[in-house]
Image (cartoon, rainbow, N blue to C red; front, side):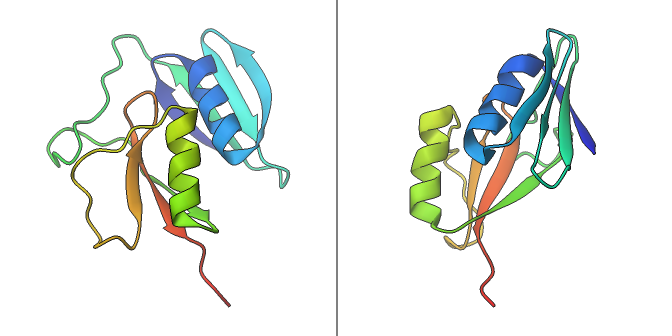
Length: 116
């Protein structure tokens, strides 16, 4: 299980529920959790005065970084943006993956699912 700092745990969990399809298994103002069908869970804990890292500033104290595999990069990007993610201007990787920011401002990547 992974726990992530959050300014709004229930909203943070709702975003990842929407884009990953994982079940919201706990939701209250101070803490929320989503769980995959495999049993893996991600928790979101309230942190007072939360401030997201400044992407791509490497001195801003990045807290975590998720890489999420998707079947179609373009389709997934549109779905994540519609769910509330934003796309920063700086994009490393020559288009091999896309960096997005979740609604709390934390960066994550969507990456093509490995074949084979």
